[in-house]
Amino acid sequence: MDKKNEKVIAKYLSGKDAEYMYETCEETPGTCPVCNNRLEDVINMSYKIRKKKGDLFYTYDLFCIVTETFKRFCEENNYPDLTFIQITTSPGFYYFMPEGIFKVDDVRSKVKFMNKRECCDSYDEIICSRPFYKSPDFILQTDDFILRTNHRFGSFQMKTQLVIIGLKTMRKMQDYGIKGIYFHNVYE
Ligand SMILES: [Zn+2]
Image (cartoon, rainbow, N blue to C red):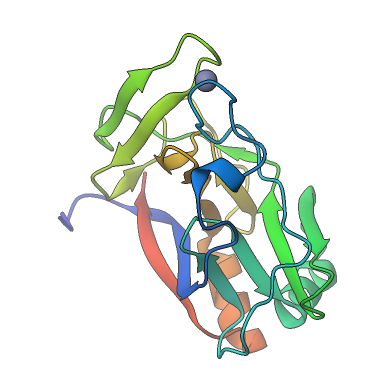
C-alpha cells in the first residue's frame, strides 16, 4: 500500500495485547443501554494487568494502558490535553487517552460505518482498511504532537480512538527508551 508519491506525516500506535478489562458487553459500563455500543471509556479500577514488557498495551476490548515511563515521557515533553487514569489495583499502570483530535480522511482511508443506531447516534462498527490518511481540511502545526482519531474504531462495546503522534514525537519516544510500541504510517 506504500505508494512512492505519498508522504508519511504521522504514526498511529499499537502495542501488545492485554487481558480484557470487561469480559462481556453486559458488564461494560459507558455503553448505550439499548444497542450496547461503547460511548465512553469507563475504567475498571480493579483491573489487574499482568507484568509485561513494553510501555503501551491494548486490552482485548480496546482500552489503552500505559506505564509510568510512558506517562513521565509525556509530562517531561509537556504534551497538552492527555488523560491518564491510574488503575487502583495495577500500580504504575494508567488508562491513557489524548483529548486533542486528529481528523481522518474517511474516503481515502476507506472508513466503513456499519449500522447507525437511532438510540445514541453510534455505529455498531467503524472499520478502516488501513492505511490512514489525514483529512485535507485538518492542518497540523507541528510534527511533535499526541492526538486521537475523531472516530472510535472497532465493534460494539469494543471500540477505541486510535492514538496518533508526530514523526518527531516517535523519534523522541525511541530516544527516551519507550518500548513495545509499534508505529504505523499515517499519510498526508
Ligand atoms: Zn445506542
